[in-house]
Image (tube, rainbow, N blue to C red; front, side, top):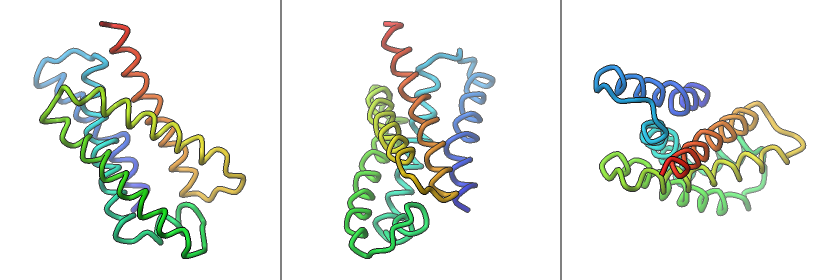
Length: 154
C-alpha cells in the first residue's frame, strides 16, 4: 500500500492534475502550474497523511521505514508527524490561497531535500527507506526547481 500511495501522490496525481488543467482549462505549462499541483499533492496530501500516521501510529515509520527498534524513537517520530501535519496543511490550503503556493513549495522542497539526504547517509536502508529516499529527492528537485524558475521569471 505504501508504494501505491507514494506513486499516486508524488507522480500520478500531480501529473494528472497538471495535464487536466492544461487540456480543460487551456493553461500553459509554467513553473507556477507545476508548483500549484505538486504542492497540493506531494507537499499537501503526502505530508498530511504521513503526519496522521506518524501521530497515530509512530511505530510504523520508526520500525518499517526507518528500521528503528527502540520505543525511545516514538516520541521523535510523533513530533515529526506534527511537522508533517503542519506543512501538509499549508500545501492543501494553498489550492484555495494561491499566494501560498511558492512558500509551500520552498518549505516542502527544503524538507524533502534534507530528508532525502538523511536517507542517503543511512548506510543500511531497507526497500521502503529507498523508496522514501528516491521520492524525497525527486520531490525536492521538482519543488526547488519550480521555485528557482518562478523567481528567475520575475
